[in-house]
Length: 578
Image (cartoon, rainbow, N blue to C red):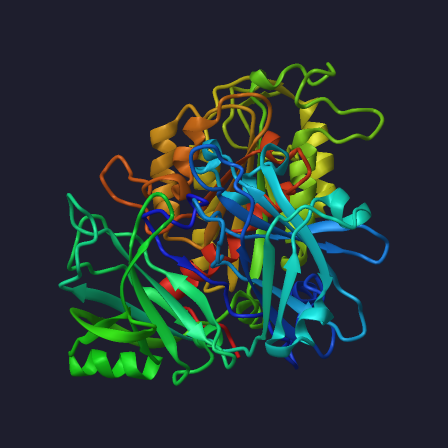
C-alpha cells in the first residue's frame, strides 16, 4: 500500500488483478462464498471501469487540487455502499486515474453507480487512501449513472457533468464543476503475466540545474483510439540513464501480445505538470523482440511545425533488459484446489485494559449485548474467515494475564484447557473470551513474541505434513508491544511460513511504534541477527481509525491477505491442485 498519491517516487502503481472466474466440478463452499460475495451467480460479465476528469474546480490556494475519486453502489432499497477509491493525483485539474474498478455486469438488474470526486488535503498525502476520512476532504463534485448507460454508449464511454449534491437534485442551473469520463471494457480472463524490466539511455535533461527525474507510463490503445494508462513505474531522481523496477502486465489488461501500447517517458515535476521527454508505440510482442535482439528503440517526440505535428526522432533510446511470461494462478484457483485459511486469535489481557467489571474498561461486557472493541474485531474478522476453514476449530489464546494460582502467562489457552487450544466456531471464541475475563487476573507487560511463536509452530507443523493450509493470526491489543525486538525476531522467522498476522489496536494508545511491524510503512523487518524478513506478513490497523463507518475493520485488515497468500505460494512455486 504505502503512500496514497500517484505522482511520487518509490514503487510502481499497477492495475488490478486477474478477475475471479467460476470453475466447475470441484467447487467448495469457500469458492462459492467468494464468488457470491462479488455478485457472481451463473452467467456474468466482468466490466473494468477507467476514470478521468477535466476542468475540476481548484480548491487549493497555492497549488491545484489533489483529486481522488470514490465510487458507490446504490441498491434498490436506497442503501448506498462505498465500493472503490482511486489513488490521489497531485496538483491536477484534469486527472487520469490509474486504478480501475471491476464490477460484475448483470443484464437483468439496474446497477446504479454514484461517483464523488474529493480534493485530498495536503496534510493527508501520506495516509493510505482506504484510511482517509472523507469528511475531512473537500468535495469537487458528484455524478451518477446506471452501468447499462456506459456499456451501451458508442466506444463504451460516458461523459458526466459533475455537480454539487444539492445542484444535482434541485437546481436547473448547476454550477460548473467539471466533467467525469467513465470508460468500460469487458474483461477476458487471462492468467499470463509479462514481467518487463525497462531502461532508457541518453534522456534529454528537462531541469535547469539538475538532470531529469524520469518515470514511465504505459497505456493501451483501444479501438476508438483512446489511450488508457495501465501501469506506471517509480520516479528515478536525477538520472538520464535510468533502469526502473520491473513492471508486471497481465494480458487481460492489455488485450493481447499484439495489442498496441504507448510507453511515455516523463520528467517528474512536483506541480503536476510533468514534461514529456519522449515516447514509443510497441506491442508486447515487439518488446519481447527488443529483449532478445538486445537493441534499443529510439524515442520520438511529437513536435509542432506550422499547423501540423510530426514525430521528431530522438537520440534517447528505450531498452528491454528482461521479458518473461508466467502463468499467475489466482487466490480463487488455490481455494478451488482445496487450500484453506485457518483462523487463530490472541487477546490482550494486560491491566491497562481496565477492570472488566467497570463500564470504562475495554474488556467490559455490556449486559445490553453491545459488543466491545475486542468482541467486534473477533466477530467481524472471524465471520469472514470461518468460511475458508473446513472444521471451524480455531486456536484461541490470551496473553498478559495471571491464570488462577499461577504466574503471568504470555500465551495461555483461552478455553482454560492445559492441553487443547482450539474452540468450536466464532461463538466458541466469544464464550471462551467472556469466561477467561472472570478466571484470570489482568497483568502485563504486552509481549507478542510468545503467541507469534506458538502460531508459527502450528504453521510449521502443517507445512511439514504437506497440508494445504494457510494460517491467519489475529492479535487484538490495547498497548504498544514491549518486546519489540523479540517480536521482530519472531516475525522474521515466521515470514518463511504459511502465516499472516493481523493486529488490531484498541483504545486510545499511541500506536505509532506498532506501524514499524507493518512493512507497508517502511523497510522490511530485520532480526537481531541481521536477517531480513522474506516477505511482509503483518497488517496493523488502529480500531479507532475505522470506527467512522466508512470502512469496516474487516476491509482494513483483510485487504492485503490474498496478496500475502499469493506471494507466499508463488515464492515457493506452490501451484494449486487441478
